[in-house]
Image (cartoon, rainbow, N blue to C red):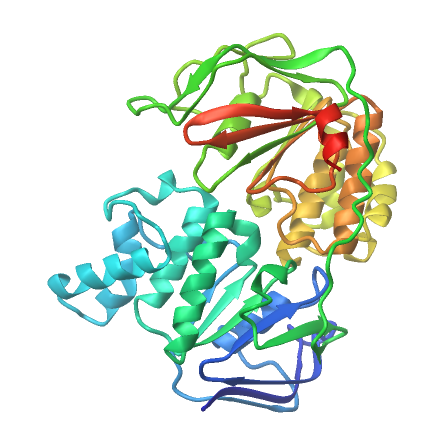
Length: 448
């Protein structure tokens, strides 16, 4: 049965704005699974919002048929959808609006949480969850009402490998039950055996059966220098009043010029460890940690340290992309002309006068990163920086990191999975309550 149909639809965000879709056609049948790929900023998230009925009707021409459907959408940043304080209350929110009795709601909420592999107490504060766990939570909040269509925006970037495997099982079950699924994804390969139709969104149109993959990653193997920037003695990482999240039995060091990855599942503690190095993670037990020879403290390092958070929009606050870059340069009394050069290198020059909050999630990531790279910090901490980046923007990301490291900066990156083909000097794995240094640069080269 046909659920949705777009015939020759043209769409933009208002008078004078560039067209996002031109003469776009799309049909969605019950029990089908589609995957949308396309360059960063091509309009994939906008198309999902259009299908979900979240956009008012400024589109001109064409026909959009969508009658009486319940559609669930999980956005690229699930935190913008969160409404309640606890896991159970979040999933139950839609059921409360249907005036269901609490004794009916509880088993429905528990079933939805099990369906997405999120096994936490209903009273668990949402603030205790990782971003990937919040993505699962928002999936449960959509599935609890049994929608006819489920739209997922970049789940691979937010979920660890176990989460992706569980997602595949969930989608298979949904499709078998007649629910239609549409996935927007830069990395579609994990969904190969599941998707009925792949679509490439480019120049405002959908092309069937095409998707991009990342091939060669131009990240240089740069030798570390002798100077130590970060040093840990053996430690337990725990929040006050809680049992240890993980432990490290051996000393750890970060030296100038290094590229270190911290790899672990959703909720393993990667983001918290990064914030501890930056001196902004509160409510944790004291750590035997020194950064630039002193105990971490918020604001103590000035231009020596940069931190890119998992949610880039939390670090974007100026009225334009250009102002966002120049803010840091002004703050540290650096030449402002380098901002234009950096925007050209990143392919963001055309957006210089736009608000960064009008950009795609991947473009926001790149702008937030550029606002740090421009002042050349000696230690750059990047929390899951690759989400939302297509192959072209990924190459530009590598260009920035290469340049920083050649100047002697150390870079630490968190990721749900090992960074294949990237010659990291160290890989710190957080697994089963332990932090282990898996390899050095020599071992990486042998592995490649």
